[in-house]
Image: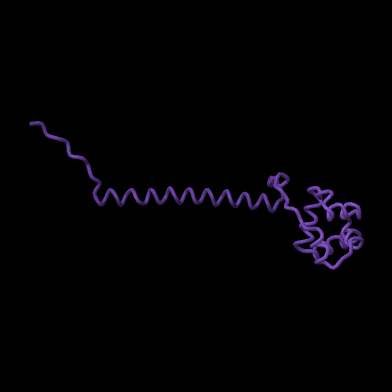
Length: 125
């Protein structure tokens, strides 16, 4: 009768040796990720990092009437205050036209923080 080969089972000593190697591998990967994150941060700070494309993101519509009224402004004051054309605001409010993407961006900024937009306009011009 032929002898069958015993399947080798790792003993305690073998298992203990392989565990640190796995730990070292995960530590190496973590160190590499940390180094990459540091490089990205340094590039962001230096202004050399590539900018993320945001132009393809959709900007939600803003209820112009609600926004203007929440600020307590007439159409004329709203236009002169933020630099919109009166005809455009009237068209938006009456549903004849929709604001183009740049106008929607500005409207969203006004909706989120009107004081900041006012401060920017005051300081910039």
